[in-house]
Length: 135
Image 1 (tube, rainbow, N blue to C red):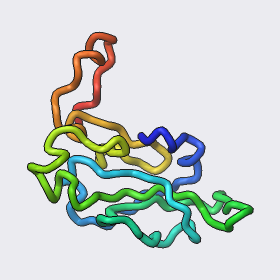
Image 2: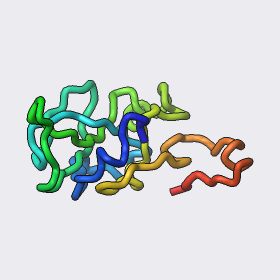
Image 3: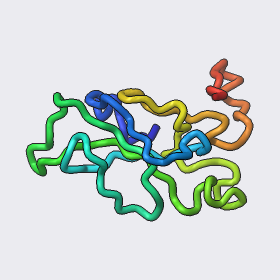
Image 4: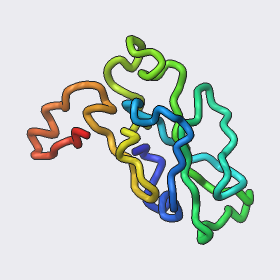
């Protein structure tokens, strides 16, 4: 999960909506927090890439006093990501904000997996007795 997204940012999520029909075929999705006007509707998307999912916030989520907007998690892929360019920049490895979409749930941070990182696990986690999720 991104270092800029903490558990408090996920506390009011009640559902994840996947808008991409091929979400199971994506090795990873990028996740970010966006400021949006509503808790439930599809957020506007202004990145170079495509929106593949977003979080729905519950009625207990409060808007920022300063801006009247909500922080919501969005999931997206860039044009140069592995799904569109399998031999490109992320043939192996993945962007720092990438997580395996199969590990994403409302209120739960997504995880990096061997699949999302496109490579064998490093020796360091094995040395420390920590196993990366394989799914």
